[in-house]
Image 1 (tube, rainbow, N blue to C red):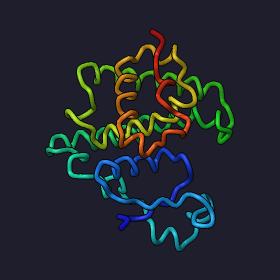
Image 2: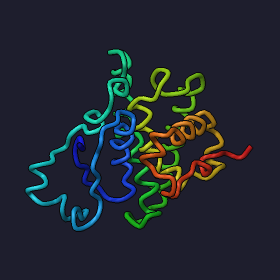
Image 3: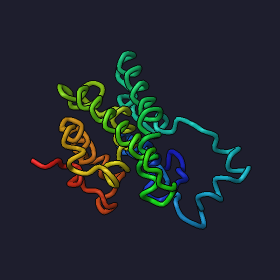
Image 4: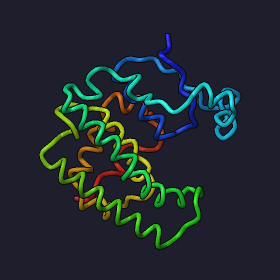
Length: 202
């Protein structure tokens, strides 16, 4: 029996933040991402839908006990990284990527500022991951899942090899995560991102 139903649109990186934890925990999540069940921009804007589905921490709901952090200290660090993804990564990633998808008009100065902010973020991650396999502890947590999913659009759309070259530890961690079976099961083998795009030139 499904633990719940996830209404989303295809290739939604936010949905992956719930679907990957579900793979780790074995939770059965029913996904409705196409008409007539779900039409993005219409179904999710109705008063009935909004009353039934206010903002909720779904990734925590479907995860197992280890993913949110196995100790209070680890749990606090996980929350820190989850918050970092939303507050620090999403804004510049959206500014840089959305114009390439036709979602926003291109603004040269805004894009250049976003690139520099992404460069800073990748450098911060690179320093943190220099002696670590994962962001928190020795195993995958919601921190890794959330940050990887938030970086997906950057790696798929705009991060050229020369740009990534300065962040080898970040690239190594990113590739490690996306090639783990639970990630692959959620992301799909044919969704257009194998991880080869993340390899910096040797």
